[in-house]
Length: 350
Length: 130
Image (tube, rainbow over the protein chains, first blue to last red):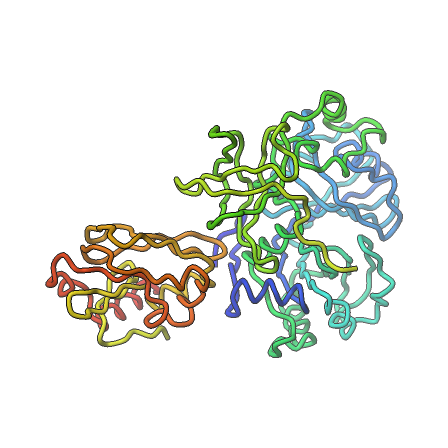
């Protein structure tokens, strides 16, 4: 067990990280992600307010739809990445990272400029369980009358799971199909046990509980950013390959002008994916060497259990950021060869 | 409960030593491999490398972390376990057998006597988990 953003969480369960990772890709994995934070936004200015402080276009959402976005600074760098759920035109739920919940709450409230909105930090009220993998729908369907097949990707529905009021969202952080279930925090244990039971956890093809290590290897294979590693208040959305959640045409938002200028001038560095081509494993913070010179650093480095490679993400100067570029990583004093590759490293079969 | 074979010597860094004539075979204990989780990479020295007691001779990597491994006694590397390059998980499945890491020609045969016995190591690990 380790301290993760102030929460006591398991790195792995008895099956081990590799088995948890593979089982999630082949069948199903269950993640207790109750550490995530939630901010409730209500009022007639809900959409206008949230649209002003985030980079993606909230006004495009319909009821029951969610979007991945970022809270940005005036420089276009990242305060946090988040998922925004639209319940109604006057009701949004922001789902933020555990390690940044308090910072985000301060940031969001201090950005109010007289809008007609009511903000509430409801993080303590919610638990969240993520059931991910090709068998996720089949398993969860045993516990709910919600027609899960009809919930599209990045959409959600309210209903009952094992008799408990819940929000069921077709979202996740693994690159697999799956659901994130939000319910009252005191129901966490009940839902956890019921999902493991419904997913036949004792069977070699059943659902496995998964810890932080597998959560990290799964999201990294899927090319998904981790706040604090790949994105932070020193990285712009464009440098981080998140131009796709950056809707410069939607109107004014924090950092819009800075991002528009950077788009025009071109970024000077970029977050790229790489694969180790020699023996060794790249780790966070290690230097990237090109032509004998230290030019960048690894933001996330790890083995990739499904791909059976060692991979990572790193910031490199734009002139070295092309797919195919050979780089070296300084792995504790030893220079290990790697190559820049396209991300995501893994994409599930449709 | 972790396995602690009677006939081995142990260190507080969770390495074991088996003496075979002039040679000491060294690896990490069952307790260590269990704490580490799935071993995905093992970095070993070369034959001929010399190490002092308690010097790091390489590292063991799990998915999440890198851990150095230390030789409890001084010596010169006679052989390394090449199979760990392709099958690092052997350290998990057979830490005292096929998961051995290096064989040292001991600089000082009496040095093993200052290491922990199986019983002492077992007490040590129990205290660590409390």
